[in-house]
Image (cartoon, rainbow, N blue to C red):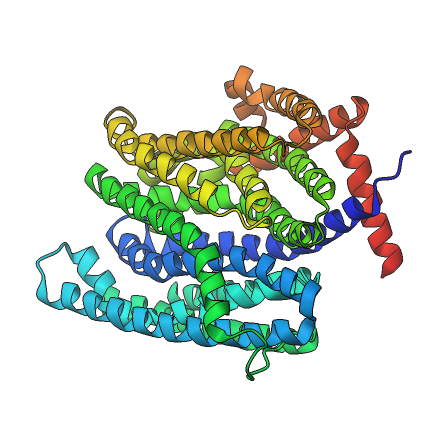
Length: 523
């Protein structure tokens, strides 16, 4: 058996640790969403909570997990290579102080706007309820954005598992509150919204404390003294690197808000249907793409700082192969088993068969985009690690401009499914343009390896869902309820896919096993 390179093994080990922690967080997150569906339902009350929680999460995506983190990692990697770790810690202290001030101002402004809309404007009740709790919920944006940046810094020390475990805190707190909420008689809808709001803010503070401990444990806790470089120079470089991503991220979040606004026109079931669907779709994205992306971003930034561009391309090829190996089967399984899966997970309480059908319509199209959503997390580090921020910005803006009218156009025949399909088409175009740009720069991954993995994975995954596609009624008679149908489908599908991959000599199972084996030896 051929041995993979130590660099590949290191990436897979780091990804495995991050994926394991992310898997725990996503499973708890899915359980949380199941409780949300049963406690809040799939209509107005759920829409109020999801609209309110959406706003601080927009800032998390923009600052905590978006352009700032992606710009900070290569900047700090270059600083460490040139001037050492203490200078990194001084620069980090400045970045965190500036970010805290900026987020505080944003929180105050958004809270005032939310208060005015919730108390002074004529809006639907579900919007009014969302805006009234928003001022109490917004401090979470400060905590979670700082957590996102600090997590990126911890990842540069090759600490992925413990950093990813931090995400468990929010889910544990909310699961406890939602579980209790099933047995508490609330006077009105506002009471349960307030309870969930307090839980979110407390969990954000706990996450921040945990990341502070990790920074100290691994020797990267900020030093609040003047850096060698002037503060103005540091902020200017970070601003230059971050601005394109901030514009792209801001436009992306604006597009997301427009999508949800369009969904409000479709009907009361559309927004929860899209949100519950995203929770299912982002389970594999979180496990595979974010785990790979965080490891690749740190590794490729170090390679770029040392001008090891061949190593960067090797990393990217590895990442895209594993995206197809894991994400293609997940996407195909979700499409084939979407209704029993949704019914099994969410059905009950205030979540009815109407909600099942609405969510299944969105999941059919969203699941098609799982490989594309995951691939983006692997492709973008090839630009950000080399401090090339403008190209992804231009491409992202082009695709966002396409997404909004496409959502409106497809909404009429496909309702919320059309909004999901428009998002998938836009992401596929975005990836194509990014890869085309890399090819023009003579910075392309090994497409032959990627194509072999893609064809093999899609073929065996399609073979695994043949029973439910070709003989759904016979399968229903054999496995009469959703639990048996889904579990039986998972077992048959998994055996066919894994056995087929091994028989056709797919390299991924061997590589993955080798990385896990070496990880055990190190432990």
